[in-house]
Amino acid sequence: MVHKTGILLVNLGTPDAPESGAVRRYLREFLSDPRVIDIPAPVRFGLVNGIIAPFRAPKSAAAYREVWTDRGSPLLVHGLDLRDRLRERLPEVSIELAMRYGNPSVAASLDTLRAASCNRILVAPLYPQYASSSTGSSLECVYRHAAEHWNTPYVEVLPAFYDDPRFLDAFAAVGRPVLERLRPDHVLFSYHGLPERHCTKSDESGRHCLAQNDCCASIVDANRNCYRAQCFATTRGLRERLDLDTSNSTITFQSRLGRTPWIQPYTDGELVRLAQTGTKRMAVFCPAFVADCLETLEEIGMRALENFRGAGGEELELVPSLNATPAWVDGLGAMLEERL
Image (cartoon, rainbow, N blue to C red; front, side):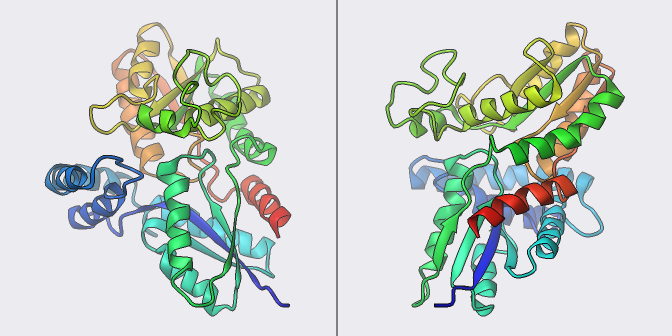
């Protein structure tokens, strides 16, 4: 039997243009996902379409314009570059990029692989840590569109790679030159935030996640699917590689939305606190993102820098993400080769 394999890289998504209309369409698609805003559908519909999308779109569009490139959205540009470098590394495999929200869509990229006669699909969610709102939603979307055809492809998935040495080594390789040049007083590991209830819902025992202060100190059965616990595991791996400890580095969470409790500590508050207590030079890693995007370039590289300086700090440098660096192409390529 002939099983031609295709690889589908999946990231979260981006608007088609840094304009209010395009951003509004993107926000509606993104925030209407019940895995993202997990409240009753009628309430979610009114909240997204009546409040969040109309009022947030102009502000978000202005932020996107700050980071937009001649080639388009940074997240998409870096994703396409990664796809192209992986095609060079794995020339015998068809490789496509898809966005969970926006373009290129999951359905369109699956159709491209199907047209290339791929009946085995290796899905690589480009999220180092598992969350139902990112990995879970992306896989649900892939499964749904894969099932639309009579000849359903054989679908396999690259698991979360939050503690994979190749991922950690690649991020350390990007970050080490920044630390050597900047010589920061403190290093922040800032991850995308989640509502606390998303973590507790991932704990099938119902007794571990956020039930005690050290719930993320190690990966155990109860928190094996907990995003926060996996972020802590990523940080432990990077601290080891970069010779950091809890005295000179902190884990924080950014990008809150709404008024419900989100996982803590919060990046914006910790930046100000550290600046006010004497930290002058800071480096910030964002290891929840494998590609630079609005949340890294604008939220950290611009707004966080301004807030840090306003609170008394002097230098804040964003450590670039993995993007399509050789170390990441080699690392992810090796992960994919194992599954092939």
